[in-house]
Image: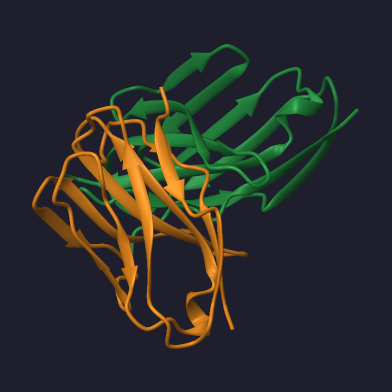
Length: 111
Length: 114
């Protein structure tokens, strides 16, 4: 089944550094979403980027989308210990009502 | 606003037992879905519903039943629990549909089957 795949699987950085996570997917999409999951909690929606958009910002988050390469990246600038979490991309194919998640990137921000 | 509420938070079952995981949302969302999350597997879609009275299968529907008699509730039933169903289960909802709509998640039900 179509699925986003995040890269890397795990990332450890120091507070203040930038963190970049990548997502690749297999088929044409209308939009792509990024979510955060803190340990033991449900997922929280971060940002949605549509297929006709190339870049989107929300606070310290920057998401890019390259439909020709079927890939997206999530950049967190000036990271904080509170950004420690797993990050997932999610896509749905065409008019499908099925939202499919990748396996996630586990980000650790060390104080 | 309570958002998406899942009960129970934890449950231990014996193989062959049945149970219902409850999910309720108070946001008048039409779309609701169930996922299971296993280590290294990400989230996998079990069943979803685009509105009251309408349900459909996701990626891993076997062993699970759902119904949607009201807009607010979307229970997930395990008819005969198996150890392979040990997982964390998440319910999610959105205003309409999965595509192009932010999903609101509950905090999950952690289910162990012995």
